Image (cartoon, rainbow, N blue to C red; front, side):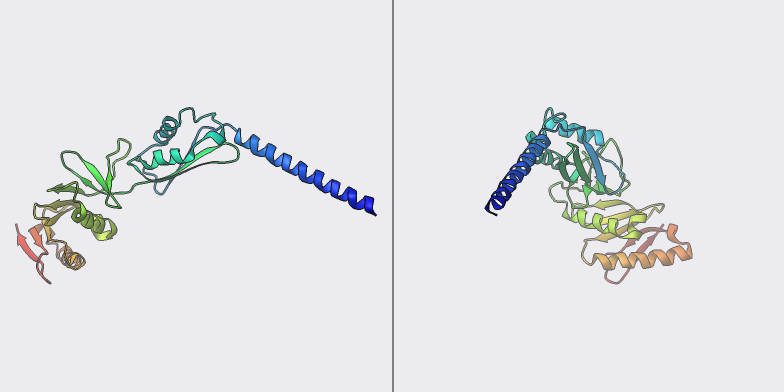
Length: 241
């Protein structure tokens, strides 16, 4: 009986040693797998402001010799930082699977307005800077007039409102801001200017615009107006041509 117990322990020790050896061997072998050509996945819409080739080049330039590099020597944090530093990219995740496939999941920034100034650029949906892209041009309203690149909060507020409102997104083609930070809008296919003034009670002003527009559209008088002024409480003051 003692011999049976003794051999049972021996078998258990041998089995444990074999499993540990196989695990260590697999881990070393897995770490030595070569990294393949990166797979680039874009989240969201298909409008590519930065291309797969651009992303692949960023990865290769940041970690020279990234292709055919051992998995264990690859610094994924450095690669993610390089991608997240790009001005077209909102967020990026980089990882390598067990077969050595290097993958980058990319979420691009989303432009909501385009500043038309000495140097044109987009405002993204977080109120941040986004450069123009040679790969794709976003159909968003232009922002013109008095623009301070270090003080975009006022412009961002109205641009965000336009982007998130179906009526405004359909009709607004230009946002103008003057030196006093007063805002006016131009609508698609109409010659009149819409004066909002400051952005206090913005929702109320936009609702007044919608009521006026619906009524004038029904009466077929939209082209009769030169200005639509929404700066006054509970009033829409219009100037005709």
